[in-house]
Image (tube, rainbow, N blue to C red):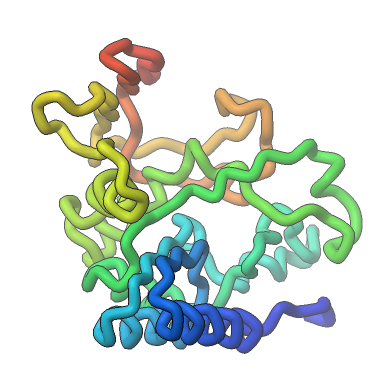
Length: 231
């Protein structure tokens, strides 16, 4: 594309280094936003060797690829798809899905990064990194379920109990005595992404106009309903 890249090797070198240091010291390591197949394999091997490592992936790295960056003839270089680490190839997407399925990757984290539109408009190299992805996270992850690469139980666990266990939090569970933090969602409801209707003030999301499956109906925090979805 003629753009300055962040190659997969940069990620893999950093992951290998940090895993080696965790192995040496016995330290606890958490890796955020895995994006490549080799990086996921390094984590898989390290876990098998007893390294104290957990890892996460974003919804967009589980679904979107670098092709989205190319944009179209009418709008070359889609800055809304500029994230760090970058979107990768289809083979990486498939590998990351396998890693969530087999427990190599412990959690899915939204990496919600809101920006003003002017931070995304202009030259690709100068645009800010990040997607305002909170409101599309569930729909993207449930799309992986629809594709048959995760079960609904695995998807929910990656968004709830997975991150809670990774950080030793008493969250993500419906056990008696746990915080009454609950999300009620319809896994079959289809909806069209309209960034103008986001509750977030940010609109930097590359999925505008696309149809997703699975929508939040209500959010309960500490036993109080803080959000009720639209029809």
